[in-house]
Image (cartoon, rainbow, N blue to C red; front, side, top):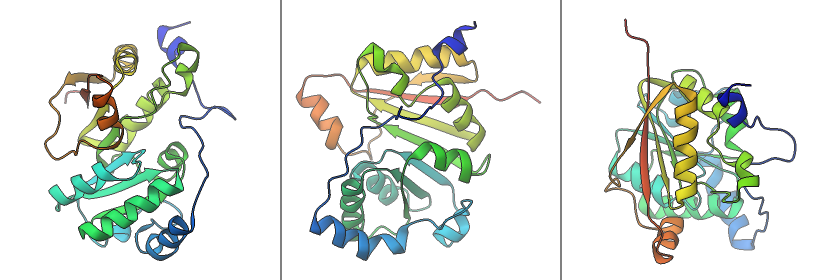
Length: 229
């Protein structure tokens, strides 16, 4: 068996890349009812021009949490469109409220699991960048199969990114950074670069939690290796 097949963990029922949390509140319900219809992407294949009302570079954030990084990026890059993918309703509701306060108009949301959305509804070569900031590290070795970065997800993102597209990853867990480097080395379709923390990203949420715990923040940029000629 190749090292690539040994490292890959194809999704199967009951194995998620996220921890389900389904609690809600009246405030969350009110925000979702009032704010989500205006910014959720329509059903069916993603049409960025229809979803955003214009044609612009599309950035996808996987697991946007309560949206601090997504909103900060959208505010700093008004010439780009950002699609936030998040499964947890309270996080989506907080993001919607924060986006309303910030007055950003270039954010859209899909509330649900990122993997089937990306695999089934996003066209090849239609994404300029993918952000994966502080994903669930699943630090125990036996849970490595649940980490988002796997051989099949690297295949998927490679297909979705345009010619100059990049995958930006940030983590406060050394084990996750090492996991990414191992997966990329086995995949062969990407080059990986250690990069500085982007100035637009707020120190918030899991990043702030990691810093308070004394952990090191690792920023990585993955660039697709395209055939020459």
